[in-house]
Image 1 (cartoon, helix red, strand yellow):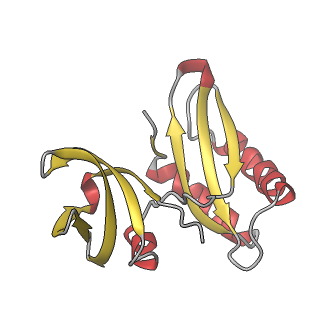
Image 2 (cartoon, rainbow, N blue to C red):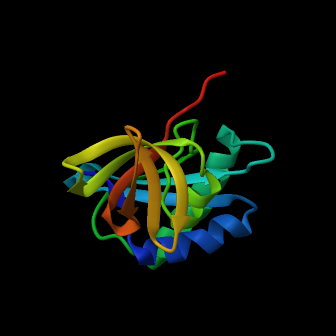
Length: 154
């Protein structure tokens, strides 16, 4: 199961990535023994992200993680663009994409469902207002296990 990286890891990485001139979108950790994965999403809205950007951030992050050692055991570090199906990690990110469709995986069912694609109507504190099959419902941010934008192709 993919989960958001620990608060400690985010607190270490966010200022480093932003200090390099990139937006720190978020990080997720996939624990699988020796094959665990730490994936960091970065963006640069004006220009987008290229391979060189990912390499630059990866080198800096790798050095910091080697020194700080916030994750026990072996894992692979991956630095990536958020892509068209951008993951959403914070209420502020949800606010930025009000009006768009979002695919959600919930920890606890809402209206009998854990997986849903909804239209994002608004964010108030830590509560999302969404349209699901014509009904407007509220979802606590803490109930969201994973969220991604639904890509729009013109």
